[in-house]
Length: 71
Image 1 (cartoon, helix red, strand yellow):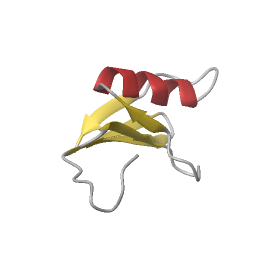
Image 2 (image 1 turned 60 degrees about the horizontal axis):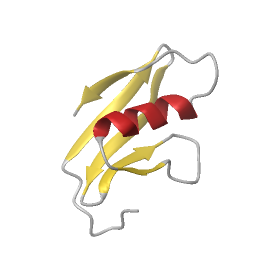
Image 3 (image 1 turned 180 degrees about the vertical axis):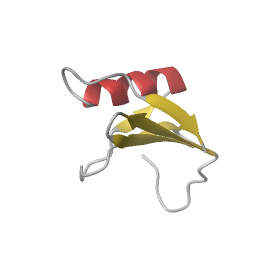
Image 4 (image 1 turned 180 degrees about the horizontal axis):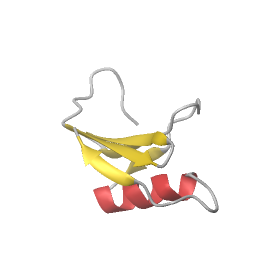
């Protein structure tokens, strides 16, 4: 997982019908999923595609696939 010394090179915000539902940060370790309102991080994944899938799965049954916007 990342720490305060990790450089975040890129960020993607996941946007669903109700607004932002999560984000993905590219770090030295991979792609870190963050979910608002959850104390634990969503994990670090080796590729952006896997991180997007993990974020979508964490949204739960019936959720729409979010749009991902790079910032």
